[in-house]
View 1 (cartoon, rainbow, N blue to C red):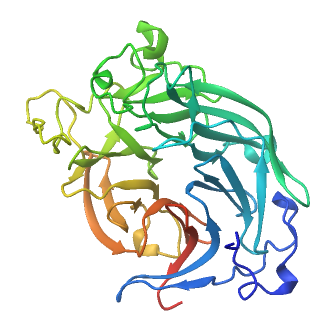
View 2 (cartoon, rainbow, N blue to C red):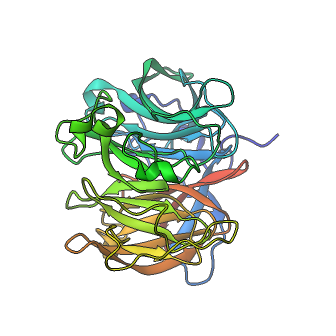
Length: 391
């Protein structure tokens, strides 16, 4: 049986102590290099694997400690102290609809986490019969010497329509820079046309208060119901959602066969799915490309062939100083990290570089010291730590 965390040769015995959030006594200890991961010649990274994961999906860096909370798709989660080399199981998680693209999804610490202890999770929720919905909830996170738990967990949001599908949940979570609003990407569930129908919240980005209620000032608030949540629409399957340093929201979505795209997300915008796309349907039927006068907002950049994106993060740190303010995307199909320069003044973007990896990548986060944490996809994935080559 494979060990669930890599320790014996990687972490000194003196560091093998239990971690418990901010109470850890090894916060200033160095992080071990981990098991070396071979990358292509000329890669800007040195990569080490520190933890084995079973279908890792989302990763969040705990404020105040730099420890990690990592979700696993089948419905479990790990709390990992990278300095001590200790991984703890997390209880109190919601029941998930596991299968296809469904399962436990994103995780984020609340803007006021250091005082409230609140964490947010998203997941694929079982509904009546074979139906499912994307959902999100919140609870209080705590640890003891042996394990961690989320207590008083409550669902605060769900997709307005149950669908018999295990695809396109999206359910990425982001908080506004001022910490007052919760944004969630809501996929089209492989249904396509609901993304152009404002009576439901499929194929949208929603903007909520931190308790999950619709936020004041949303562009379709006067319509009521699910429409009151909607910030933008006409979107397909958004697995990347983050704010840039200037406070602008961006979303990264899977296209059909071709046409993955990055969009600058603004209130009321319609991004055209499924009426317009730079890809085509899986059965080969064409989808009309965007045109200058089609009435839809055009992507900042699109890819054909696809990159098949996972999570993304805007980089803001000193370790990779030349990348400050740029977008880093962890990719599934292309097994790469793509580095993108964005320009919020005109909603444009340019791919600056692409770095190959040996496995599919699901999510990415910036460590407190500026290193990168990357979650590999699949049943034998790993948590990778990336530092600059030459260090």
